[in-house]
Length: 270
Image (tube, rainbow, N blue to C red; front, side, top):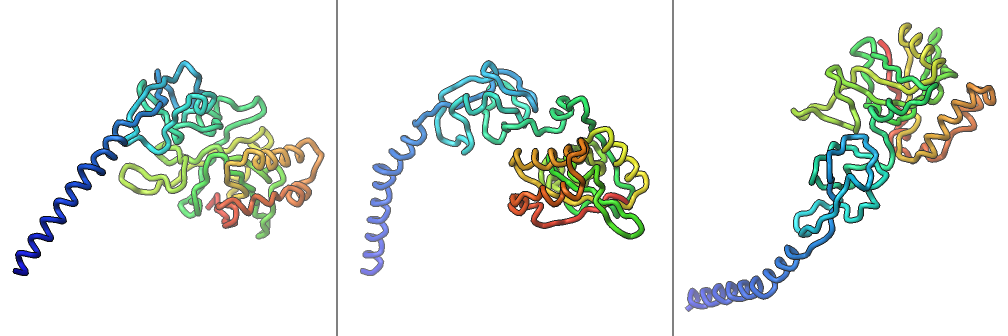
């Protein structure tokens, strides 16, 4: 009798489950799978760093099922932005594939101002490998070691990083970037955006060795970056000393930067 009752319970449970699936589950799934939305796709080849225009995009209707969470349904959200990935015709345009600023190193090199140079230096020894990877648009301060004392180099109080590159020429564009085998990439060279005076000073320091970088700011706030670089420019036009630059240009937002709050130093010479 007990076995019989258990079988009745199991049979009842299965019938209830089947009913729920039939009258609730399947309709819900059908509604989801049949629901459609507008999706923005590439209408032609779009290379990384390209400023996106309207004729590069197309709007299509697609089912919502399995769409990426960051898909774009309005072309206005993409027009005027910069491609951070190569896209081919019919590739879906997503938020991670575009950026409001042209931060890609190759793009920035092509848009350097007449008084700007891209200067690459290579650490002299394995011991000089950076304690953490510097990223494009980081702001660093350069210290020189003179008679055992570290001092800020006035011409290099605030310097913008263009990119770090591995020995095989791979650009490091994000934290903990890995190769195809999952190994974290190790920088071999670092490229800065500098003016001619800064270039000469940095080459001299790199030749002598024994100098350090400290990470001053990492973040997406372009106004903060501009404040640092404007302060450095003030030193060159004679309107501020390096001491004034440091003491008067210490945005509270530096504390909000996840990297600057660590106050790590990275040795740049062996």
